[in-house]
Image (cartoon, rainbow, N blue to C red):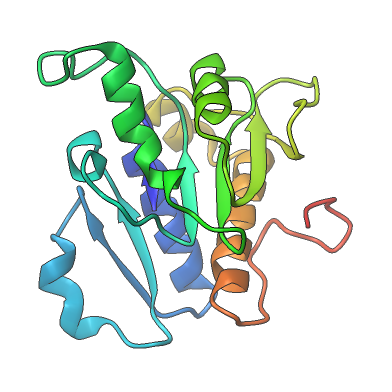
Length: 193
């Protein structure tokens, strides 16, 4: 499942696409496309479920997905929440109820996410990504080139770093489901474990 203030539709769509293109059975829904309840009949034990989740969908959950992605946090939806902190905590629900066998992928550069992790330490295996060349101080680091506009994605194609990021997410999804498979952009020498 993917959330964040910006980029969740693009990210979740590409994750679902990469999984499908590598031969995996995928159901994609949530805040984008069809609601998950309308897709229940398509879900089997082999199905990978890719969700885009909004702050409103996450606000009251008490269960988190096996693989949770938190892209970023910016000041939005303050008309609904009593404070920016309340909005951030709603988004963080995506990882707050995870267990040690789960995976939490988040920005290693976003100070707001770092503060949330200090307040609510993740129990899941942590994978961080960054847009710069400096390694993150948290767990494993993925160096990615973040694309800031959909236009740049269409004009220049997906950067190798971006594909690598999605490959890591796909790899985490596949490993969490107990299948031994890989996704494009991941090599055995990539340093991702």
